[in-house]
Structures are given as C-alpha cells and as structure tokens.
Image (cartoon, rainbow, N blue to C red):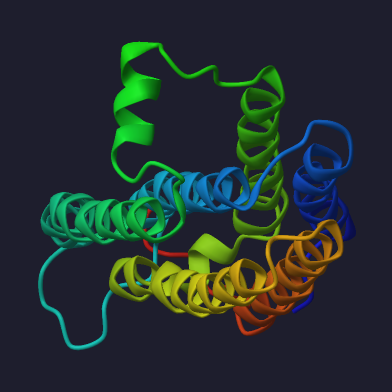
Length: 214
C-alpha cells in the first residue's frame, strides 16, 4: 500500500524549511539539528494517538485492547521521552557553540528563538498530521496494526534518521560548516526521510475484517 501523494508533498515541503533557514536566515548546524530533534518529539506525539487508535489485537495476548493500551501508553511516554531527552542532550553537548548553556539562554529568554524556527515546528506538526490523517485514518491503517507494533514503529525510523544526521553533522563540522555542506546534509536527510516514510507505510494494509463492534 502506497502512502498518499499529499503526505509525501507535505513531507518534502517541511524538509525544505531548514533549507530556507540556511539560505535566507543564517541558520547554523546546531539550529538544524535542534529542529530535527524537535521533529522526534512531534513523531512521538502522533504515535501516542496511533497507539490509542490501533484496533488489531496483539498476537498471543488475552487482554482486551483497552487494557493493552492502558499499559503501553505510559510506558511509551517514559521510554520514548527518555530516548528523546538523551538525544537532545547529545545534540547540545556535541554541536551547540556553548554546550548546555545554549538551552539555559533559551529558557531564560537571553537567546532569541527566531520566528522561522517556530514556523518550521508548526510545519512539522502539519506535515506529520497530514500523513496521520490521510494514511492512518483515511486509509484505515489503524485497523491492521496492533498497539505494540505501533508503539515500536517510530524507533526504527528515528534511529536510522538521526544516526545518519549526527554522522552527517560531524562531517559538516569537520568541513567548517560551509553552506554547501549544510545544504547537502538537509537534502540527504530529506531523501532518507522519504525512504523511511514510504517503507513504514508500504506494509500497512487496512484490515479487511472489521473489528467486533464496528
């Protein structure tokens, strides 16, 4: 099953915003990596909704779907939240000009958070939201996936993306963060994002049998 064209177009558009930031708003490597880190948080938020909506019983489980989800949701929040937090700390320690003081300055209001970054974050919510609406709901992917499978799904995509982005970040740093290197990093992440997105949705077929009660 292919993902919708609208979802793919919105994904490309959201990924082009960092390119605009580099070309027109003097974004540096740290700003780009922070945006990619925030995208992990956006993916986590939508995954919570997907876990709650998943209608396929977990294989081998005798518990009701409601009971399964009741245990998985808090576990995912803690586990994925810690994963996300550690990744943010690594990005800060490895790439921020002033280390953790960069976040201290943002929290204190001493560092300006550009409107472009806010627009970029909103665009990420919109892009992933469109995919959620068009694919997960519109194509009824929620009927063919269990809560536990859905809970594990974002990890593969996030790990692949951000290992690649971190490695790319090191290469950009070694080159002195020239404009061309930053652009190549953004384009590389965009292509990888499209690949992981289409791969994740390719195997999700809507269930032909309606769950009991529908």
